[in-house]
View 1 (cartoon, rainbow, N blue to C red):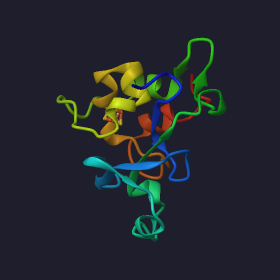
View 2: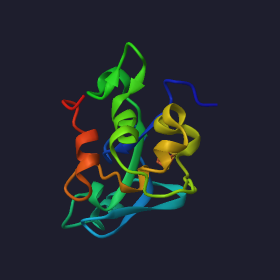
View 3: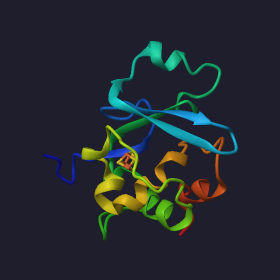
Length: 144
Ligand code: SF4
């Protein structure tokens, strides 16, 4: 069973602790979407090479251990991920039906924000190189 210290960040880098792939980024650069995998996949050099010439995080969604106090998005006082919270507040819902997602049982955002996070999650791109400005704002720790 997942405890608060074992939850996974749904917007991680491939070199994060315990990183797995849980989605493939499809759609367009203006409106990227995540195609969620039925099962998480291991991060391997071969998989990362498939993204070339773009960054792996522009092609895949990675989940990795939530760093809590080791992450700029963590608010210790309330024990919340502010990136997840701001994504719900700033970004539009892009789906009405919650996607089937292999990360859900351990996902920090799901445990914290519930369905509202999943309705916005498909458009989240870690690097911010593509996609919606609202997500970039949510991903900026300087934005309140
Ligand atoms: S926010 Fe929802 S859809 Fe996104 S990774 Fe977490 S459980 Fe999956």
